[in-house]
Length: 315
Ligand code: KPL
Image (cartoon, rainbow, N blue to C red; front, side, top):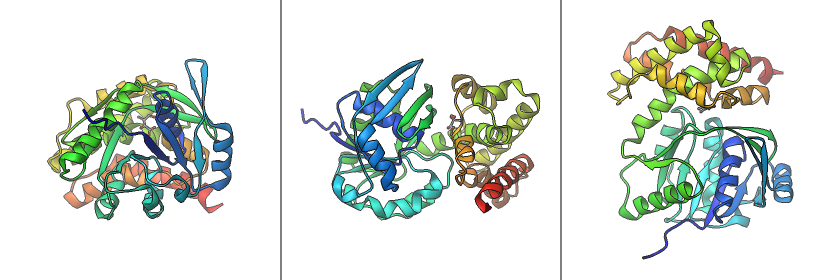
């Protein structure tokens, strides 16, 4: 049988998730490259590699890192881990990595990335990854595991048999590395089910400046979480999306499973970066308006995070 396992893997964006995936795939012997728009940080990663801290233990991995995609050249698999606000400007820099066989796997939260990926003209197949893995960065290249969670992969558009084989091989590589990964045909439902979780957790953790688990002990936050998730579930159902039962209970389960994790949105706020609020509560609000559905709690969360962002982005 032909070995279709991805050998050369490029991680684009060495944030918490990118570093976690890089370190995890190093374990199974894949050749890992990290592409970073920041050449200074790329130099640091090239020199110091990745460190993964998990359950009090630290593991170190050597990788290759660069800000120059030409140095990497064509790869089998691209794990696109930049945040959705950076997606549009990142895609053109990926062409040196891509052939018609390269699978591009996009790991963004929310739904803002969907139209960008659908519009993009790229040489190879594009698939989405929807994950509940938790991780946060301690320093550049040093990542702390924040909770195990399932990852689902699937194509946004109809894919060729070769592309499907490529996705199965990527899933198998990740499973070999110890991740819980499955391939689904209805990835849009997965995207929305994850969106509902992010709708409930991300904005609130940014507003209360707390880890995911602390939301469970904050009655005011819990009431907002529940209302925001139910509003988003109504919007999803009105769009005909197959939402899994008990979205609030599932969101609380993610809070428990990733209790020590600093959500990606709180990490953005602490680092004074643009957040993904537009693609999460903002996107729910926009869809609700289009459908004539009220979403006042999502509107409040959106406004509160935008106000937080404005304070540091303006300064
Ligand atoms: O996806 C996440 C995020 O932080 O963006 C969760 C699942 C909430 C884990 O922190």
